[in-house]
Length: 141
Length: 159
Image 1 (cartoon, rainbow over the protein chains, first blue to last red):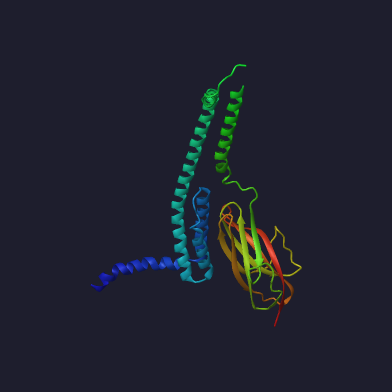
Image 2: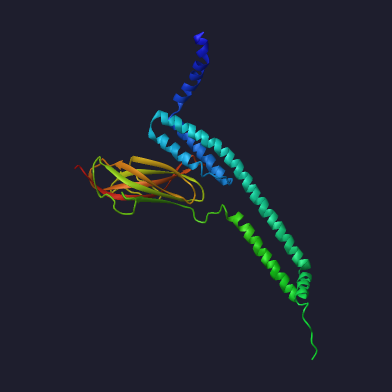
């Protein structure tokens, strides 16, 4: 009865413990380098990486501290950074696209304004001029 | 005649406005001269006041200044080595000596970091050369590239 009660917990421990022990410094460093490459890519896509950098620096400190426990913590932080990097990249792509759309629309509006000025500019200018000078009186000599 | 001039001035203004709109987008990722910075600061975190006389095995406390103007986030490593006057070091070739201490940090573009460091020099002798080498991680190559160096001269004594 007792064995069946704790069986799921034992199985969970059997699954988790070897994974924790298997984390080596070189593996953690390799994972860190992958996470850094992801963060760099996020930045290239216009994403905000300012929140990810303190985590990467903390992970580096933990990797270099030397204890196995710190390596596990570093691994968790790096995985967290990788997860956040994906969402930051998506929002970066979205904000870059929005920026391009705003610039494109602005250019279209300005281009259309240039065409309108070219076609109707003279008429508009003289219309305004006539309105402004409507009070003028021409006096004969 | 006048309306033509007004028309061209107005179109000129519009073209300038187009340039103002487009320029920030085109120039946002452009880096004219990318560079990294490495500095060694004294015990007070300022230039100067460096230890010139240290005891072998004694702890030397300094500050490392690293700046990033590479145009993107960078992963740096600073190796501390000890050599002598006979050994060569240049901007291309690092010092051929074992690393006595190493520091790693990630810095965002346009930012810099001042990190407290401590190490000990065991080789007794006059004019020992403590060299600080900056390496930058290249994600494409999957390794660190040697960038630049700084050095301090120290006399290492037994007592």
